[in-house]
Length: 70
Figure 1 (tube, rainbow, N blue to C red):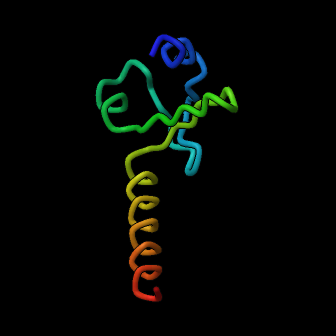
Figure 2 (figure 1 turned 180 degrees about the horizontal axis):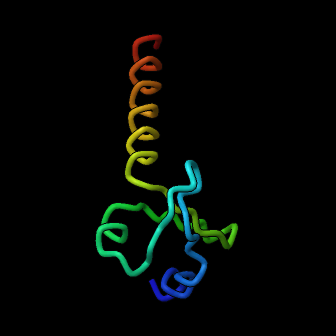
């Protein structure tokens, strides 16, 4: 956990996908954006709620299609 907190300063200022600005001091942004820590790459990715939801929906659709074809 301390290693992940140590990467806090690496959080980008915008969504990786759509570049929506992220304000670290805005409670709404802090609660709605998703942070993905890739320790092996020493990288922090940030996604807004809209992009995150689109990605989850896409993964679910692919999983359903894959299950049907099996």
